[in-house]
Amino acid sequence: MSNKNTMTRVSFQYMGPSLETVVAPTNLVVSFYQGQVHGTVDIPDTQAGGTEYDIPFGTIAEASMVFVSNRSGQTVDVKTNGSTDIAFSLPNGGMFLLSANALGTGLESIKLITTATQSGAGEIEYHVFGDPT
Image 1 (spheres, helix red, strand yellow):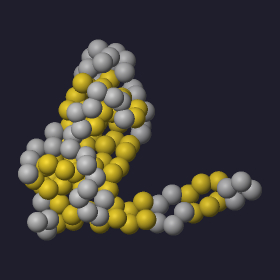
Image 2: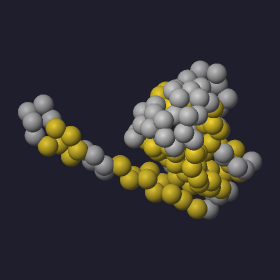
Image 3: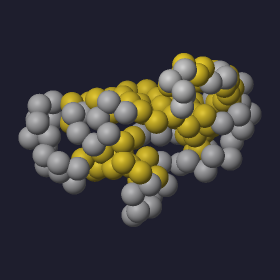
């Protein structure tokens, strides 16, 4: 039974069609968890493209909240749940966030794949929350 929670608050603004500033409503999601894993994937200088890195989930069986920030210097491909298919590509400087107020995300693993030879050291930050097996 989950007894801790994360609060994800997302807000953004953009330029509308008439060049007016539009502020989107703030969204808040509370995600419940018992387990958490935090860290970075270090990508060394000259690491070959196509290198795979698993984001460790530790004892987490299913994630209720995941945040990944790509500061590697290159686009990385993302695979989920052991799939051989690329779910999406995450450009350098990009991030992705999954936050759900109940289990049922189905997210059980994340694999990151470099798309080019690394130039200079880089890293990818991650935070995973969910319930253990």
